[in-house]
Image 1 (cartoon, one colour):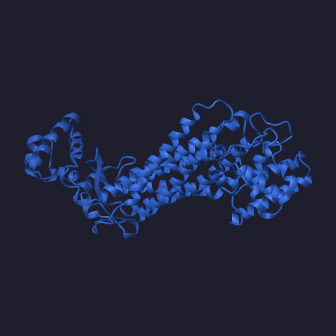
Image 2 (spheres, rainbow, N blue to C red):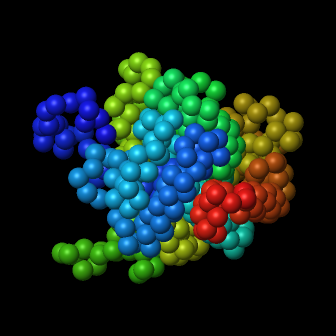
Image 3 (tube, rainbow, N blue to C red):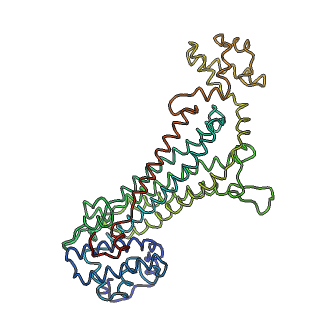
Length: 481
């Protein structure tokens, strides 16, 4: 591509070190689609002869069909996927292929293909996240009145329902869906037409190529267009935070499946064994989800460290964005698939959860709130309940098992109705405040989450292939749009 400037051959070590085809070849489909849009625009503006444009469009369309069918693979001695496309196209249609790169640089070309790739990959990740949310919501509906301890500092704190706990994870993932959709929108700016950094003197129509690619916006500044990788950083960040949320859930699967907790058992389809110990049943998928979260966090740190020192506009350092992005998206997608299967294979041991409601004085706060309703200042109530906890602990009983006279000896305001608030079930049912664990509030959360799922799935249904791809499928690349 630059042979006229150089008299000597590139050293093989430099060639190997600088080649990106081994990893950027996964952009081939989107680079071909971007090239189709660019070639059609060149034809429409008369920038290249129509006969050459027809040959280029036909050749690109055939390459795309062959690539998608597996007949053609992006491989060879080429430096990158862009030079691979040019070489194969030239082999197929001859010298007319040399006109494809008119008014285009690899800088805006790769940025275009990468944005298209990101949007497509995010749609798949969003669909997977919705599937996992749906699993948790369905399980929550089945366990609205399954009582269990809620924890702070990994110590038993207050009674909640299993449904409320599961929905907490679902809300985290729903936030991830929102972030992923925002990144999808951020990646929707077309950089095609920015050239290497300073645009082009040719009479091109960047808005037309954006329209053909289904991208809603066009770059405002050509230097920014080729140097910008914010959407890559945002995509990796969204994946990293999603992995953090999955990791927190996975940690609970690991913890709860231990005999010490015993809150869950794992179906044989989602557990693995030991090569030495016959009795073992290990939550390895959950452990790997937890471990891989650090990997995606590393992808984000690597990208930001690479970007921070780059003077405008394009630098070859930006070649490093792709492997980090691919790894983050692949890891998030794989983790979501494993998490969904694992979540379906979790068997909740409600008897162990019920047993764990004893021994931690989980309704102590309810007793303090009871005294507040009797007119006692909260700090005074807090102190008196602490004394009652010590008394129950010394007797080896629960708060609700203390004799009424003993309780009244420490807090005279206590009456016979106190036992209505001291049971774990009574505690949860009484927590009717917005967003709380009471069955009525959980039912509201289920409705709201299902609404968010419906909205996300409707958005996914509206995500259609780029118009130029539909024209390619219909065989009318120079016909009516």
